[in-house]
Length: 274
Image 1 (cartoon, rainbow, N blue to C red):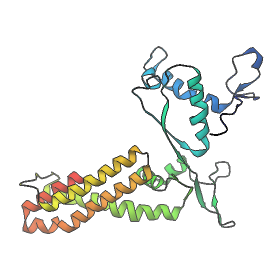
Image 2: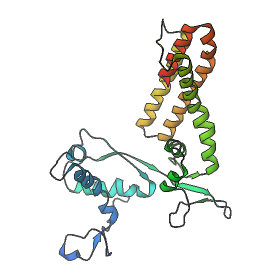
Image 3: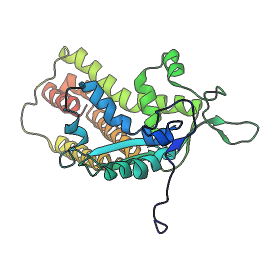
Image 4: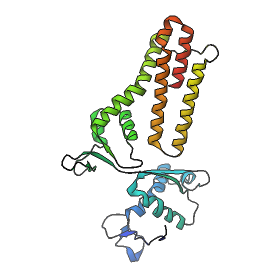
């Protein structure tokens, strides 16, 4: 910041790429990271149609649109300096980026020879990629959970197959999956799949439970506003833990035999929480 902005070349001597529209530079092309971000605007325009100006509602509407961008740390400069400079230089009312969420690197397993994480590399066939993930048959929700739980928001992280299995079994299944499964199975078995009404005034136990869930919800919203996705997921799983605790303490399977009214109340609350 103290040095100020430095000049930066936006052309390359390549045979492929977008040609420079100037006779003095007809043998050159645009540097891809000067050219590529403009594609965000042009792709939107092409998608909506050449004769449709609706793209301006997004890209030339700074008073109403908040632009968030997500990318790896190596692309930060192009989106925080080069592209905004291009937009400012046109002297037109472009929607400028409000927030950028960048991540460190996700590495792959540990190299036995060096003891250090290996870098993802398609050319070296190091890592797990989209087509590989699809071929495993593992549900997309499991991939989403692990990648978000392991998101390198503050520092580099490592994709480990052992950790992938452990997080699925010990967190996703044992926590969220357990609550959802036991709740839905009990609802199907004891209430024919119909959510019972909450008859009567809320009990102190239920009020306390709703209060704790709501506090976690507010924390979740605050973290999402800060684009702290990894922490947001952590809070979500904490909410699920509260739900599991509520079910375990209330024991609706016992109430079904001794207090049907309270059993209905508990299941109403559990389904709302789910």
